[in-house]
Length: 54
Image (tube, rainbow, N blue to C red):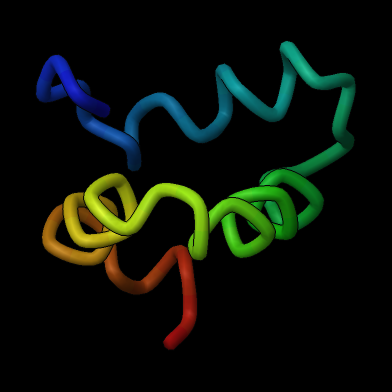
């Protein structure tokens, strides 16, 4: 994310890397890190806000 990667395009890759059956399981971890990484959350919301609900 810091390097400008497209979070939407990388979500399936991250889900596969983590062994998740689909991206919904991966989204759970993004919500857990929201407090620790507010800059990342802001970028995700800009690029694919529909993935991580408010």
